[in-house]
Image (cartoon, rainbow, N blue to C red; front, side, top):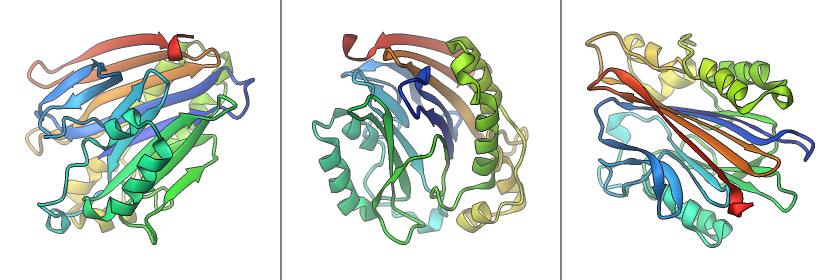
Length: 276
């Protein structure tokens, strides 16, 4: 499970072109490398995956890709499906992103459930939002979204989990005055959302996709996932926060959980898009 929140500027008068939060939910002991620059990409790396891919990454041009699984039962997963892990890296490295996404659209059915979120600046310097979802949709196709606030989790945007509905309310309230906030104030508000443990349950869409018990589903219905002690070694283990202002200055905070030490560790990055 994962969930991502972001606010896109409507005009060049907005202070921030983009404000973003991503929660990564995963097995707590899954080998993962912290966020770092590698091959022109800033991201963490899933070291268990053969593709050594990522869930959230960006490049020096300010292009951002995020991969969220579409929740499905273990029985419905294909053991021979190709890894989804390298898809974000492919998007970030693509010389022509439209061609890359169109090619993925044609072959999306061979993968287990996924949802790719693509963010790129247009000629006006404003971010455009595109998604590609390969399950729980009538047609596999690239969709473009023009909303100001977005919350996407492990179901299609038009079939949101209740925590995504709740999360949209939170981000709208928290960031409605973002033009008046410093980066640190934006990050403080995003972290308040990131650690929200309110369980949005029952959730018919979540139940339909997991086909599991209430005890299994309830923790998953929260933005911050934490199972009772000894129940399941799975939960929210990384927060990625990002702002890009109108001068194309990028500020990133990664806060990740170190399970063997039972502590959280921060990493900060700042750079300007294309060296501007």
